[in-house]
Image 1 (cartoon, each protein chain N blue to C red):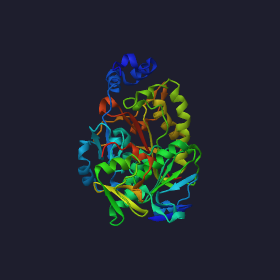
Image 2: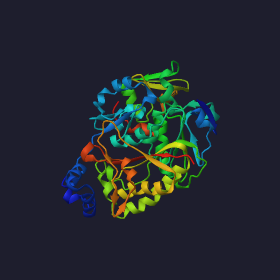
Image 3: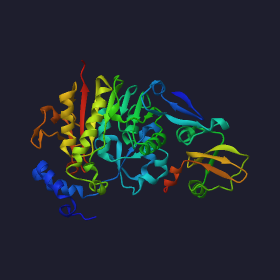
Length: 309
Length: 118
């Protein structure tokens, strides 16, 4: 692959993120050209963490600095091992492990993952809940439901329940203690893993995504119990899909943002303004994960709590 | 933990997983017993979860046999009278199989074909 970002990245993309990142932008663009380190999440639903680490020693594991179940691996094809088939681990990009860490699901709770396929975060939620409680894994796309089901079975997530609704049309009663809204997005943060993510990129793409994202977030808030926690996350850098969507929700629903800071990873705060639109001050409580700072993929994470009436 | 029947399949799920009634419900938990109409057999997911606890009806494969098993072939040097067995490799319960007169017939999902390192 051509590693010169000036020749590879679309000009409007460069222009957009020069504006957002200023002096740091060249470092940011260069980081997008570097391949991602492979990482896995060890599945403690299938055994004790220490024992599993020992059994997987042939994968040359290095612990992630921010997550005890996450490890970098130098093994060239971690998705093709017997241990992977047995569900002892899930191949998951390091930054993609963060939303569930921020959601912090607890054993015994009712949790909804509103756009669940392929199931990386769903199975991670089940793991954190230690098999106690229920995780409703919703996925509207029938083809993607097959992958989701396969991963739930493989990882031994007996507490997962699969539903096939269009997540935008879920309505009260508020049933869930926690909700994860990780909607489809322009996927700019996955460029290092899959450069073709840029294929369909255009400056209009984010605007199209925003409608779906707002619909899913609205549903997520409506089915969340009072006092419950919702995490909204995307794997894109686009402010329209991130702070823009969160601000839209803050204006319309009885939710407040909570600070997202994760020990062991350098996250930026949410931005206060984009494209002439000022966002509420509290949007700074969100976290932006940039690859040039963390050597991971890119992510945006917001944590909301639903207030009482 | 709760057991739920859906047609020819028994699934296992959590107590709350059995109780909740979400719209658009497709499946609760993971499959446990399949083919109830034919007497039932442990599903691959259940074998991967609980198979290590089994002490009877277990067959341990060597590397050469495992290669045939993963490829979906019949392992001719293991024969029996049609019993369903749990197949282990290096101590891991990897799936099921039928010990027939022809040999061990693998009963594993297609996903097993992705396994290249064992």
